[in-house]
Length: 345
Image (cartoon, rainbow, N blue to C red; front, side, top):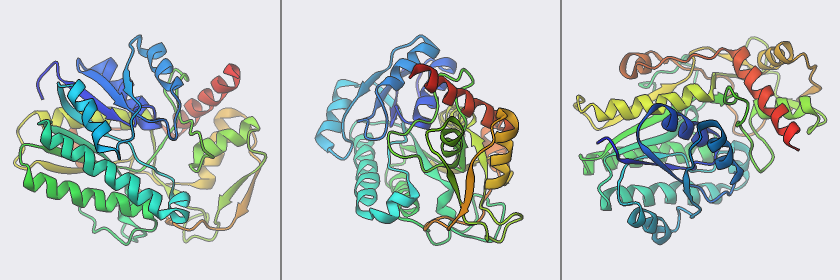
């Protein structure tokens, strides 16, 4: 992609989207714009981005399932060279209860933005995928070549289908370079503590539930299941700092911009390569924060897999990307962000 081009970040007010915008503004010369209709985020996010970077970001509050509204953004911003596509619903439990909502939003928005890539000659596309595409498998750690298992939730299935759509687009339109990044479990907050995970709806991810419990927003948290075939009976995940995830998107843009590849479709795992159980995560938070958490052992949740963690050696070799933040730093920054929100309120 040529210098001076615009990068469009969809879902730019979201958790990973906002941190990626900060990385783009601080480490590249690209002009950055956003699309986010604030269905699960806040316009205040852009004030936080400006506070950290000193730069304003133009956001278009359009629904990406509305093709006409989406195309109008491309008409107005006629220099878009790359897209980082985060915009999607992402709650596993909600997707089990409301599958149509997830199929409609996650797949239609992807199809629309890919059509805009074709019409407006965008060359570089980074897709926000998920380790949930691997399903509930016994082969650990998972590699990019690991066969995908049955999706355990409609959310996971939208990511599996999304990747298939991208493969087909890559074949049909060889001028489009596509990278699918399979995130494991992004956690933590920007080291400044000025921005972090803050869903408008009830949090479903472990770390915001932990910090909400510690601060008193949630009186008691549940550990969902304690009889999984893991070392302490609780789910094992590969937690990775959100800033490390954001940095990988810059590496992915550089990778497909180097024009040295024989293909135009790539998949990379983004994880630390280390599995951490729910109880281990809780104890790490208690250690760094000095807060004792009020938690109970509850029932398993539909759609959850027992254990998954990554083999990230391919990402390290090809992208030159390595995670920098430890589990303690993940918890420290998440707690710093929770305290910042309390101070603001």
